[in-house]
Image (cartoon, rainbow, N blue to C red; front, side, top):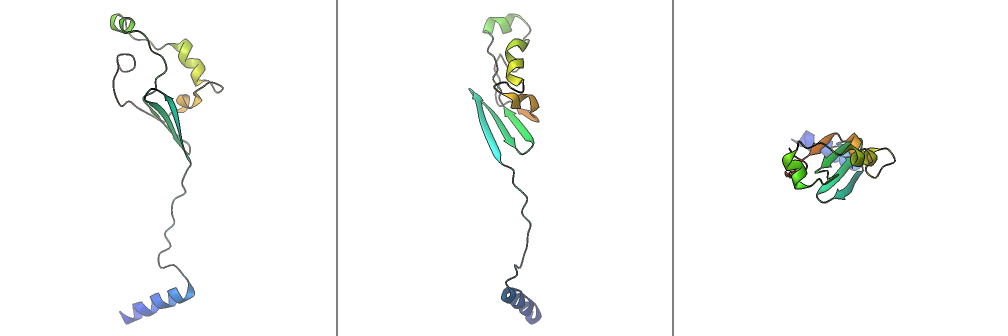
Length: 104
């Protein structure tokens, strides 16, 4: 026990940390509101898309027909120079609730 105390005291006297735990590098976190309940959350090279809301077809259109995404609305948004290019590179899409127009 006395030997351990001497080692600790010597380390403190030299100004050396007792535990030199390397902390992981932290990536910047960017959060972008996509409208309604949608968010794009980027941390480093990873992107999480939460409840993306891109178009709103009417109830009868989706109730009486098979829902088909509106490519004319969505594709320009996802383009590199579009309003929401991060949606095209999402690593994970999280759907937090269901609606007739975006969870079938």
